[in-house]
Every structure is written in structure tokens, then in C-alpha cells.
Length: 134
Image (spheres, rainbow, N blue to C red):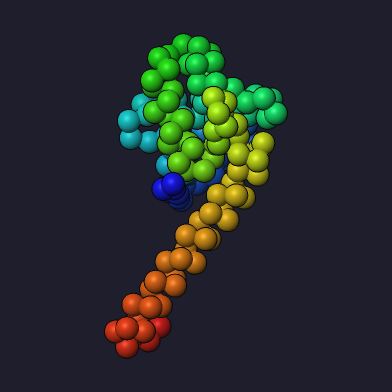
């Protein structure tokens, strides 16, 4: 599975307002930009955060709650799952590790594994070319 982790450095919100913080997290992770003009990704995350982490929720239920087509929800769910924020088990969607903190910590571990792999290959390239770490 390919995982895409995008990090945007954006100034944190000045006030501690939950919905604003969720929007900021989604923007910082590049999940609510580009084609997401209706900000569906942050809305999906908000639903997942209020969903029982033991039962999850289906894409159809998310679409019904947002009053949009299931296809549009599936598009955004794919992005959120590929980023590592959400997980799918059979037909149900869950917040990874049951919380925003748990999901972010696991995404951080994912990013560290990716960078470890990049460093190994970079070291091999430098060794092959006789380059020293500058």
C-alpha cells in the first residue's frame, strides 16, 4: 500500500476551538486542499471523531449524514486512509487508534519509517558515488 503523508507548516489557530483545530489539522496534513472546496475531508474527520471507535461507521452512513453522494465520500475516505488518519475494516471506517492523538502519533511513526528507508538508499547512493555527508 502506498501511503502519502503531506505536511504543511501553517500557523496554529490562536484560540482552542475544536472545529477550528480539526480544520487546521486537516489543512496541515494537506487533506482539505485543492479539489475539496466543500471541505468534506474535515467534515468526515469530525464525524469519525464522534463515532463509537468500537463499531466504526460505513461510507453510506457518512454520505447520509453529510447529505452528499457516497462516491464523493469514498473519494475523500481514500485520501484520509492513504494518509494514515483513518482505517477501514470490512465495510466500516474507524479513526486510526481511536483518537486524533493516536492517529497522529502513528502517522509520525509511519513518516519516520519512510525517512529511515530514504536514508538507507541515500547512504547507498553516496557510498556508490564516493560522496561524503555534507
